[in-house]
Image: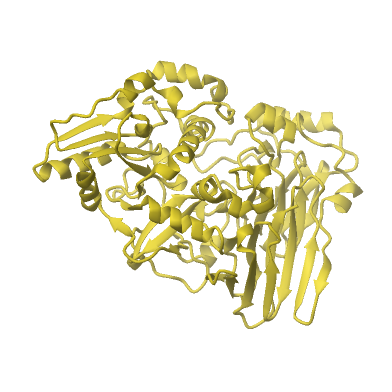
Length: 591
């Protein structure tokens, strides 16, 4: 942890609050943004207090992980410095006791030391003595009245509503530093317990609350910086969300190191912090954890991706909005094992299992698209023909207990990986990405439900063993995916479904278990595409640069390996090749 950033633990920098602090690269850009009109984003506590003083009565609600103490003190000091009197009420003062909250949430956080809980069937109101909070009185004798903290909007005030948000990557950097707590909890928990409570309880509750109050919010405030904020009026943010929901847009990616992480992203994405030991993951679009950045007059403001779904989900998903609701169902992320290691030998839960055990609606079906690889790269996928499940389990348990090596290739097939291969990993399939790959995972959105069976006897970046989940795995493994069936059913076999003088469209068939499909467009000049009421998630997987234009006149320039989304409501779009040779663009969409 650096001296300059004692409240967060990471080598990576916070996204700058101003465009002037960003050096734009020629290739992959880690800071994509979308334009609001000039003068729509404002900077600083002082300007925010101008608004608060004008309103006189304000509820300041927001997300867990915000430095609420700093924010309260900074606003209070600024207002008092203007010679105004002030009444500040903390929403947390009206929460139930920590003991009551622990009892309330205990069914959803799993056993101590377990990796997973179950999505909470709770709302923010369950955390409060609601009758007391709703009867909170305004002090008419002072100049400014403020209620502040998560749940502040529940106060029975006729008041302006400010919402303070925090990107998930920054929340987790703060969690790693131990500088924040879970919602309604002041006890210090280890990182596994904190993240589990965040994922299964806090985020579920606060996302519901955000959705419920979204259209009432007068001001949205981005508080990812330690001592600064950028903010905008609610009507301008909602207008911005509406606009991108009918055109092309790119979420902001974020990156994380890992035990098996590689060096490809560090070498090809120059804005990344080079002192980080490696980068294992890039969250290109993992909807629960990505954000969307707006820019106005050189100032940047990030909102959560789920806000777009809450406000404009029908535009985004089109025909599939009824089925998936506010959940964006497709995930793109990178697994970087260049000069790194193998991922763990793993599988993911069946649909029934993930629903009954963890409360998810869809399960973690995946594919591996090989964006780049070395000559000796490989993928572990499917069982050997003669697999003996009992012996396999015995060897895994012996390894976990005594630290003995397992000859994995006695049990699991190894396939040579080549650029643009697509390996199919429906739920319950044993698999792993081998070293020397840059894998684009084209997958269903769930992303933490990985049952590791063997992790090559290595430690994580903190020098501790990673959790092994043999029991969960053997409740889910499909031992029929073995022998020749693996080559026949789990390795996609592309074929051309459309061709003209410039454009070829390949179908890369997915497994029958997958609810999404994959096409690859290959062309020299341009490709014109109809959405047909479907959302498309795309990436330039060969070539240098493209320009994407949508029917509403919007356009976005994208570099190699950048993910972009075309909402169903965009109707049509044109991809223009800016490269000197033929390019390839991957397109994923719901079946």
